[in-house]
Length: 82
Image 1: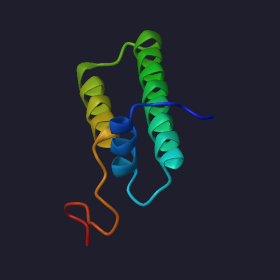
Image 2: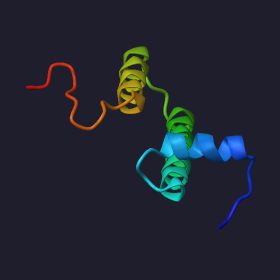
Image 3: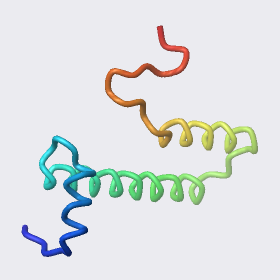
């Protein structure tokens, strides 16, 4: 697929993509957003199907926050990692 865009948007896309091809960067970005949307749908279904306790809700929300937290850059370490 080919998309036309303003020169400044094209330059910004190339800069954001870094060493990767812009098409790969765009595909990864779209997949990330789709993954987050699917997670949101599953989360809403969970709440609709069950009546979790307050502690279960809190635990689940903490788990989701951990899953959606930004990942460290390659070569970096997570806090507490050996």
